[in-house]
Image (cartoon, rainbow, N blue to C red; front, side, top):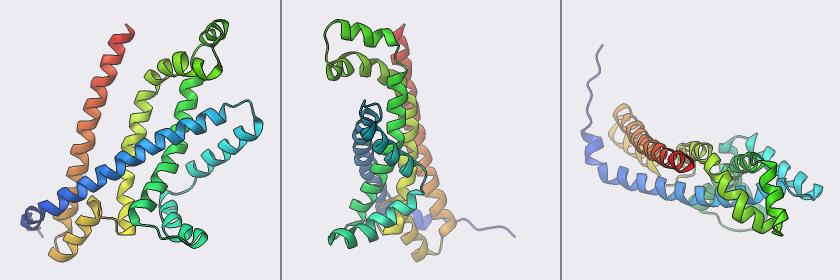
Amino acid sequence: MGYDWDFSPVWRNAGPLLEGLGNTLWLSGWSIAAGLALGLVLALLRLSRSRVLSVLALAVIEFYRNTPPLLHFFWYFFGLPILLNISMSPFGAALLALSVQSGAFFAEIFRAGIISIEKGQWEAGRALGMTEARLMRRIILPQAVRRMIPPLMERSFELVKTTALAATLAYGELLYRAMVIASQSFRPLETYSAVAVIFFLVLFLASLGMRRVEAVLHRGRR
């Protein structure tokens, strides 16, 4: 038995879907920025000479890398307000969940990039009398970032897809708007197919941009 496709409800609700896409990108952008900052801090603590700080950073990294993202969404939205006696918006809970979990993954990427720099680079900087902070900022990180861009971008793409879990908190991102439209129009197949295409186009275009950046960096190294 054939299915009679009808995308007219999707076209009629293009405005809410585009607004949902905007909310998805807004949440993704802030989460990536916060995750990168947290990831760098965790990576530096992980590489710290202080065993206590290193172990604490490792514990945070391993916990968030090995627990389900959806659990974090629920914990920050339902659990944190109970502990701190505060109110938590869906956006705030989703931002915290995505930032901390992505920070744990970004931390390992940063750590791998930093330790991949040849020992001679570290010794040369110290021979010039640089402090560890200046050595990291002026010599190590600029070289490491080039090596880290592909995995950082890949993890960022995963974060964008994970924002769909914010629909469980009734945050008005793309999937949540699609769920509302599908329930009202009784056209879930068309609605969710359109959402899949939108996600594909956004991430595919972003991946093309990433490849151009990689190509430019590769030419710069040569």
